[in-house]
Image 1 (tube, rainbow, N blue to C red):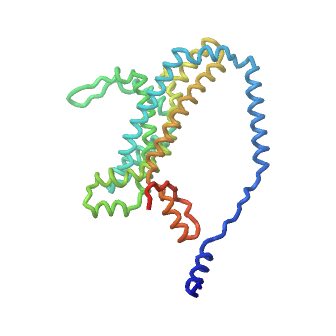
Image 2 (image 1 turned 135 degrees about the vertical axis):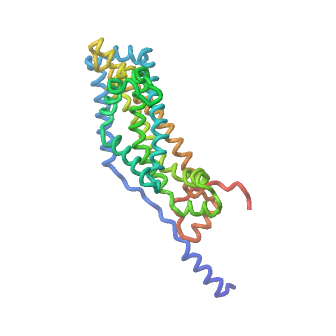
Image 3 (image 1 turned 180 degrees about the horizontal axis):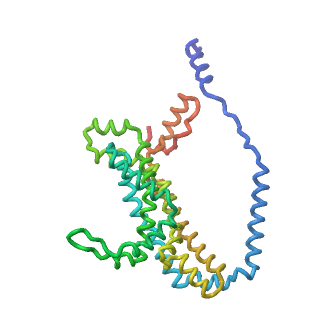
Length: 318
């Protein structure tokens, strides 16, 4: 014989547990129609391009793995990596200066950003190429430094031009990432006796990297394609410059442009894969991970499971 208390508890449990509803997914015929149309257009373009002799596919396959093109691709990668290192280092320094309470340091950082973000990168590269005509040497009072050898190195000038331009954008990315971390995190670190460097290294930067990494990856990919502008220095040993030189000798610009585009796509794809794994590494701990038992208890208490949880199997037995 059941007591009134037991029956009321059973009724409350039944009211708390929602009944299962069979969800029927919505049909989207428009999506399938659009997909079929797009697939048809892609197939039509591929067939049309394959049959078009103006593309000169024989020349394309002949120079796709040519040693000169491969070497130029390596130069492009070297330009990108070195310029990005300069951009990240100087950008981080400028970001710290922008956040400094010293108005002089803030003014220096603002002036740097104003110049390198306010002028086109192509104009800056042309200026770097003309720097040897402006300065042959520098007199520092007790000695005169000859700059002709340094300023005639087109590769170094291209790296500096790209790196300083990139630093202006990286400074704002780093500053935004640091300022996105709540101030309470730094206050808690100070309460624990951490120094400024320990606070930045252990508290602020690990959280700021989640915000800094995605736009940094985009800037790295964008910088790879911006290397095609270093012909303004002039430096023509990179991918686009070398492909242009070969196409001018063959009078066939289209296949060599396709060769350069293919190499850019391959390198960019590899960078996007690397960016995915780096973002996943720094996003650890950003979502709650609960076991099945914890999720069941949470769902029983709230009625529905929260959306920002990830279920992990519970290997331990009760």
